[in-house]
Length: 370
Image 1: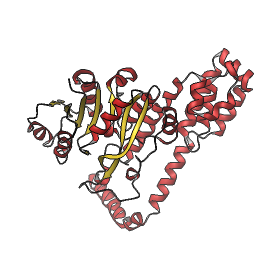
Image 2: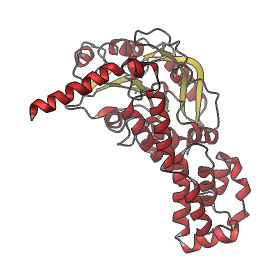
Image 3: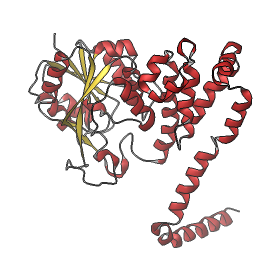
Image 4: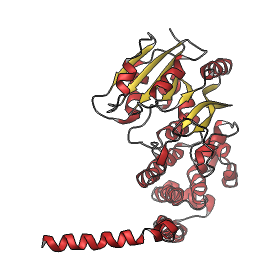
């Protein structure tokens, strides 16, 4: 039995998928199987996949597009035969010694659930990304942390781990759950938060993955209106995972500042966690969850009594908080700020004549319809 199941998800990346597959087949570590799951690509991806005859490859294809998470979960739960799983994407590239370095580390450190690597951001044509305005250029350059420190980082900053760099023990998926359906942008972050609730992880500093940044933010997580909108919902769902932390001592390891709410055996972790949420600056999502925790507690008599006796907090103070934090106003303020920057931009002013001409043409069209 091979040691590693490589799962390569594919969707309309005919331009890149041969390079992605070859980067697996050229690995210096060879004890693996390669599972390719194509999401009903409409380009020549499937033809390219079927052009390979390597016995280590097993290819599957959806009849209709179901997004990458579907293929990942099917492959993990029904196809993989190995104790370790590596995730790969059809537009990214691995360095030839990626698996060798990761397998060696994972087998030398039984306490580690998953090992990641740093990544080099590349452009559409494969050149190193040099545009400093794109966060992906340096986002994966992070020092190693304990799982508690990673949970604090995810809570405050979001993701900084490269999904196609992960080598993870299959038991971690079985223990923490597979990728959750409904996520399109942050399914990997959701997995890392659930993973770090139970397991330590490690990031190799070498850039062993080339992570391709598509032109015009065409990546699944690219900066577009629909992805920004979807991001808020998905990050909100991920933040709610932290509500599952019930032990106060565990909470202190993630958020040392809650020690001030430590009342020995009577401490209320829910109240302390709510304060952590409420004290995150410039985030209406965090504040909303903090208020939700307190609201729920205040409507359970024994919890409300603890709030009052331990922290001198009751529903009157809660009402003051709901008036203090502009949950609705914050997104509107962000929208107005963004709109102002667009309307005041040089490109907006230069294209004004074209917009005015378009308005006139639409009015004439409606007039002739009458």
